[in-house]
Amino acid sequence: MAAALASSLALSPSTFRGGPESPKPRFPNLCAKPMNVGLAISTRSFSRHRKTLRISATVSVSNPGVRTGPDDLSATILSKVMHSDRGVLLEKEQHKEVAEVADALQTYCVSEPVKCPLIFGDWDVLYCSVPTSPGGGYRSTLGRLVFKTKEMIQVIEAPDIVKNKVSFSALGFLDGEVSLTGKLKALDDEWVQVIFEPPELKVGALEFRYGGESEVKLRITYIDENIRLGKGSKGSLFVFRRLGNST
Figure 1 (cartoon, one colour):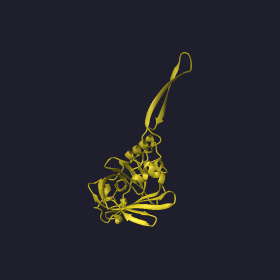
Figure 2 (cartoon, one colour):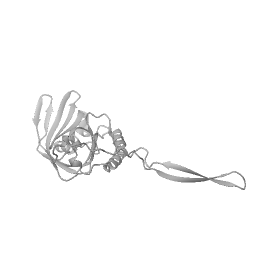
Figure 3 (cartoon, one colour):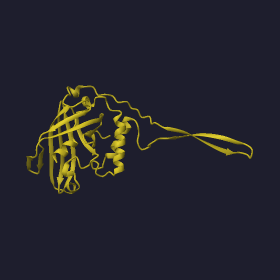
Figure 4 (cartoon, one colour):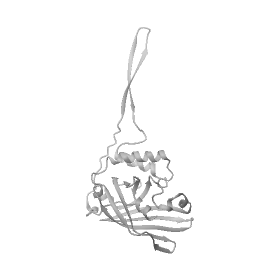
């Protein structure tokens, strides 16, 4: 469970210095939608011997459900993953739609996301394309019958600390949580590595550590003031939302 939980919640390089004081990058609000314009030509007969041509323009958007500016794309991906139990409730086609929006957002990502100070803060894990990955066995089909996930949080502290926590309710009355603390390292401009200490489990009055260290790698594909996207080394897509933001 520890390795699966760790793989779902890793971001932020060890090379950050003075991150919180750095100015926030500004993202252009490019909301123009690319449109395909076609010309439809029709004929209308006004008499037996005379016909006139009428030319009309028709406008279509390739996918009206997906908006194209970074702010609109952020809102779109949030609308698709909210209330999905972190992806568990989505069908295959819906996961595909989330991936398409994530790919579009990637084109607006800053050039060196691992150095972006916006990475620091408290993040809610909203979605994973492999829904049982965050939380490991606790999030499997059987595990969800016993353990109801209450929250899944990641805290990233400057310069290189990440703290992950999954809180749950066992059998509907016994509260518990699993937490990990890790050290982060930037591998390049987009990829980071995190090495986690053994996880700590709290259930009721019990508290103990189990297992060993775990290591994960993650590519940061998009970051702004509100959301963060990442892809694991095996291709899993993650969507995080900054806590305190309701948009």
